[in-house]
Image 1: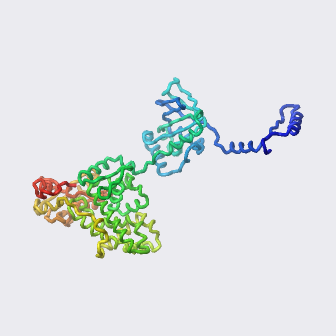
Image 2: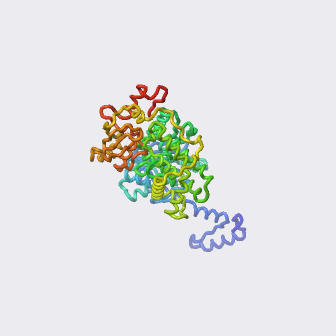
Image 3: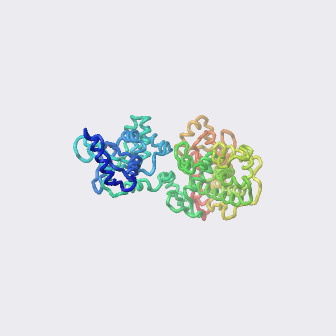
Length: 560
């Protein structure tokens, strides 16, 4: 009935008399009145989560606190956690801010870690937080904290660690023995006597800590601190690589984001900028397929990074200036195609002397930056011819194979026809300023005839990865190690293999290419790789000239 559920006295007397008549031979009939509020309560109860219990076995080393709320912390086996999910499924997460997200990349890594490296899973995972209404400990032996115990958790809810629990279940289905070896950190809090809302507050606090981005883990890499020191000592500039630090002004330095983006554009593989275009976090991924190893694994010098950043800034300004003179599809491709346009610019400038002192590289960079706008119509024509006038620009520039094809075609076209001669588009403020440092090592050696024409130089690897990648290939033909010196500042080396002329860095890059070293860095300090037997590397010989005053008394003699 509606109302307060109270029967009228006459109606209640009739029902009471009828029940008495039916119950002469035992308790067969009963009656009670139901108001609208009773039906509402019944509906709520039907849809409310069902109470259930789980058990958590802590073998040893666990701790307990009983004030202000009963709390247990310790480790449980991952297969026991998997059993929770197998039995109760998504009901475990009624108190959590989110359910299981499926086989995301992170969850795939969780499952993989449980299967392939269960002994170390404890170190790599934050564990699971559970709130419950009651905890009943059942000891296997002595009733002492730290001794093996099985906790019975009544009305348990996972408020943090939903992905871990579900991943444990999926790992257990694939490899039960391996999963059983893994341990998971468990934190249990009994909130039966806690104020209303504490469980929700715990869930919120456990899931609203500052988000950790892939870039943040890069700050732990030792090479980043070394790059910062190189920036300070070699260039007198700042390099910021931790999120939260203020980025330096453009004139005083750069951030790791700007550096990584510039190095990706400078990389010889155009497919790399496509992957970065599709997912900027690709810059921070390590391993064979990640960009970070390719860009920073063979630690770039501060001068290489700084020049790369300066070129990307100059290209960006030139494209901004150019966009006002373009229309239609030409103008539309500048945004999604900016990374590929930067890559093409780097390929036109070349990188064989990017980290060598002197103004040669900067002069070429200024020339290309001033005319990069002429590449835009060329790129559009190539894109239309290869993929049609209606191809989605964002999709094309996010596809690695298409970017490689377009970049190769653009570079071939420029090589055949040359860059159109147009006025420089970048303002003087955005050009790469020439260096005030001493001439490059090669220039010093040539100007002072330090090495005789015809002298034989020997190539040497400078890092362990380089030795592992090139050792066998170099050993197949001793000529691959040998070059002859001629006193020409531009191309002083004649390679014994093909008789062609190269710069020191250019020949190293050629050796890398011939050896098919897939993980080769963007650039190299070539003068450090060529040795005059019995006397030293080209850099060491140049430093001797500097020490003798050959570079001029007022020059900055620091070598990058």
